[in-house]
Length: 184
Image (cartoon, rainbow, N blue to C red; front, side):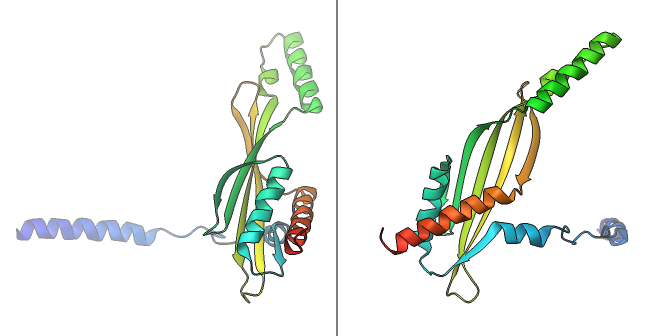
């Protein structure tokens, strides 16, 4: 019994010693340089405390923008939606064609044309919560896209940080909240 205890003790000591030697990578908890700019792009505050009306307005705006509602949890202030869109780009198609042509002239085989983007799914996630002063509501929206190529493989997954998309969403949301507040 004593021998087994010593064996377990030494194994545990060895494992803890190894774990203690591991270090945290430099900058592990550092936020990206553009974090604050993206956060300001994605958030707006509204002078109301009626969370349900804002969630209803968010759902309406997303539907007006062509999204299909995937999930809506009013108790936690979440609305998730998605839409399918065309992802073809004339420049990308022309570039792939030229690369395939040059490879064919050089006598090598290529399949750049099969890597051309075909379709994308744009996903929207919106969180509504009370602000710290509890007199306003904070709305944070994020848009991501998943792009598939013509070979039906995922070619990109990225967060969309286009100012125009967020501006259009929040302008439409401001109008919808105004109309909802004035029963128009």
